[in-house]
Length: 326
Figure 1 (cartoon, helix red, strand yellow):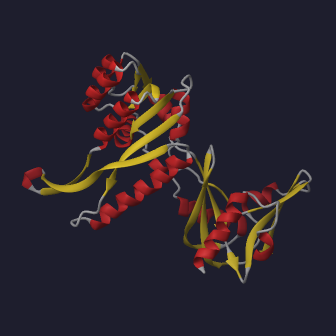
Figure 2 (cartoon, rainbow, N blue to C red):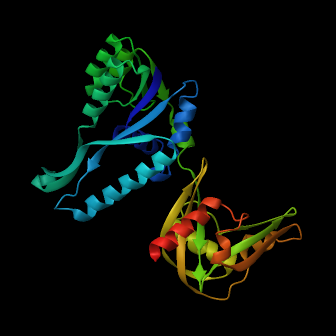
Figure 3 (tube, rainbow, N blue to C red):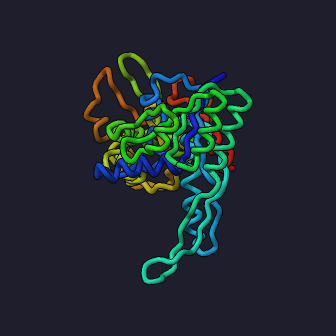
């Protein structure tokens, strides 16, 4: 039997948002938040076999197609982000927009989630009845889950309430008898993964790369660098291309992301640019005999068979991008 972590996604996000609001910090985009880092630290003493987030499916509302599509895209990005961080994501129930009376009787559109708590409750009881778990860690502050907790406990399955320092549910804490609280400082510590941007510049069957010679090792990377505070990814990409390559770039579109344990690298296609390509910025200042940055156009046919281009995942993604484009 195993230990499983079940998290009500929207409830969990709302609690995280409360922490950022209370501490007067800017809330990050959820698809950049380091959920894995937070959970790993808070539950460091727990041996967890499965980690599951639950969300409701979002459907378009005829009154606000644009807003609905935005929410659907945000959920898609978050789902992919969580899966890359090792979480399972279950979509159940639904989110639908409905018109409600607002200030002075004016109708306002409100999006509400239905059915997620039911799915979590059903899974809790099913797992306990089938004797598939010995311990359930519940990442939700929804009091509607009390009956499921009672049923799980009656089958001798331990239930732990994972709550927040801000506004934890005393009833759930009392009923489970086991509580782990996430401190505000822990929430803020993992406010985002480090962000990088990289440029994919292809022209006449060649791709622009940076040949690095560092301490006797030679390898190739994509032009780019770290995103600075309060910069958007697009702003960072334009700045990096200007600094590193001395070009004014027109970003075509983001084409893929590569997510590691501590950072996310977003790759952008750049078709149009102005200026003469030459090394500049911090890279030029760091140039010396044992630390070189050399701009090179490389034949695409050679790139895909080379072993010293990093990260290797990016090479495969570029190949997939070119296949799709054809």
